[in-house]
Image 1: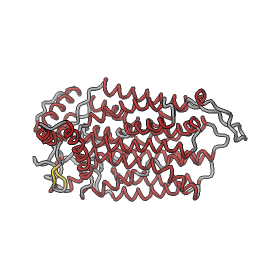
Image 2: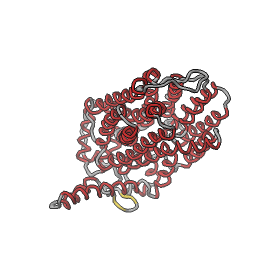
Image 3: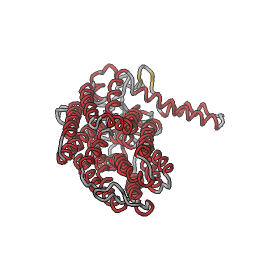
Image 4: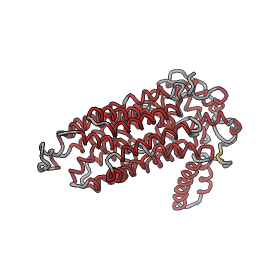
Length: 525
């Protein structure tokens, strides 16, 4: 096996072995596509908001600073959604978040497309962000928990869908926006012709309507064309091994190779003792429900509702704390700090291309976006290949991040239009490799009990970049037009050091190196 293959043999739990026996069949391949829909929707809507902002600015006659509020509302929603849906997947189960995110995204996307006022649009984008924001952390968690260990690299492959999301939005925008936007100023003139926004500037609405239809088609595929079972790892770690055995028997039957799976085949710990962190046991959902049920008998509805709210907040706090225990704290903080750089650079690419276009048009600008997103599409496949070589996850992450920083520097000093386009595609390709590895790596860094919450928190902090980028970028641009690019390059170089400093590549590596802690932590991979 290659150097980065995950540990097997003595770190294989019975549940890991059972998943390997079931293999990679129809159920897992279908789940790959359906989880990919969530990743596609995430980037599809992010790209859609970015493309729509100039058209929305014309529509409601807003200043650039005012229309930037929409982006902040959307990313605030994504930050909130990542935390809530991540915790929901740990407390209520993976299926709830998996099914709800795209359904709500379709509903709120429709409201966005028909918003009659700026205020309604801002509120609907906040709600849309809260739904879309849960896709990556929850879908990645569900997918990896249904894979045999030798196929964990496919989690990195999910980023192909992430890249396709941006490309799909750019193509939809090229089709509907140029012919349905306010007229541009004539060459050599700064005055734009009058525009009846209700009749001439509906392109951004058509684009959001198209994205809503695409999202609706994806959730129909998830709910009506596929029977999703709860994650067997989640069931085991919430005290329901019998249900896990039933689920795995059903999955093996779907794959065409029915297996007789017993409770003994789904154990996922080194010992029978409950999983703990810092010496304190993690309460399972079943245990929480039992104690809550005995306490609520005879209580009135008011106290039951308060109990439910308190238990939900307590679960989030405990699960978040579990992702920051001493053994995992360094990795958690590094991953969170690293994801803060995600959405900083694409805005700079758009700005730099804009300054190099002479007589540019809406159509030309949108085609630039298509080229940029298309250039990054192979990055997901390259990232999936790299992690399976002797480079492993950490070195692959460091190399792709360092190259992104180098292309940032080249982008800032190139004097020609062709150079700007080539270096921007270079940034797109290397950053896509980087994010493919990072997004595929994150769920594997945490154990089952905290995986959804930890990934949700990491994704939430990632969205902070979308909130702080507009004011930070504006401040740096006021100082010097090159400062944002140099700052971004520096950030990627620092992140390269962070990647090399990661102490391990997955929770399984940690367990393999610390066998004495088997009574305290469960093995997941």
